[in-house]
Length: 281
Image (cartoon, rainbow, N blue to C red; front, side, top):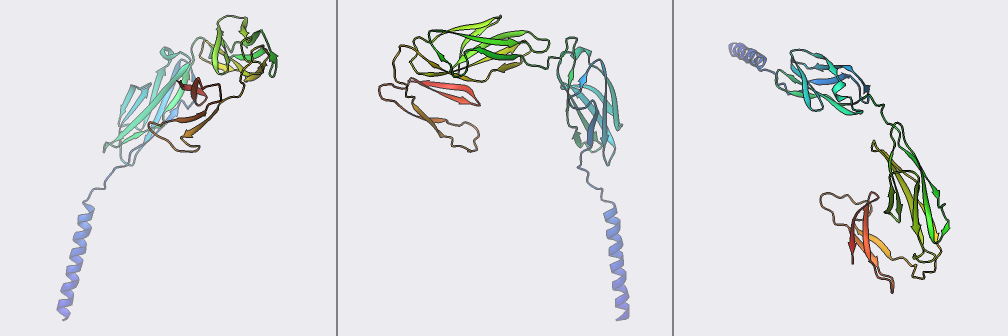
């Protein structure tokens, strides 16, 4: 009995030693990508001339490659290093526009780690235009009663370093007038519009850098000899319903009630304030 007990203990010890030896030979799996950071420049920087681009990478195994891209084009690749210090001559990109810096690191197990990309603006010889034009309506005034020929007057001032390209006037949501030179005066004939009808007006100024700004919308009332039905039709959106989550192709369904003796001419649909499509009878 005693002899059997010693043999059993020896067997257990041998199995334990074999298990320890076997487990020590199993290589630990590495599927963790490197951590990569663009240190310089930082998000939103305004740059000129020679710019240091500094990228660091960390991994629990050795880094194999760090690759740096500017506007999608690889500019440098470094092997077996944890830091990249690249001198970027930004002069060819000096256009007052945004440019994008990206970086990736690959470890010895081919795990790829991306850095958070950085957006910068490279300044050109012409100073950056950061201000939109200013615009207001000088005539008519909000709530005014108008008749005959009404001069819509838009007062526009250019933004920083960029002249006004054009000014447009919108009446009842439709672009009615446009002018490229000051003074911005637009004659509007309301004599044939229905007496007592209300109409909305706003103006928009555009500059050559692509900035634009609009005036607040005002409402005026027409005084004329034209008599008509001023009762507007009733319209509602029946699909999609408010708050609904939509995806893919969405059918927008509007329901309109005709007014007696005044049939519907057309129905327009606006998405985010922009007229997207119109149906006509």
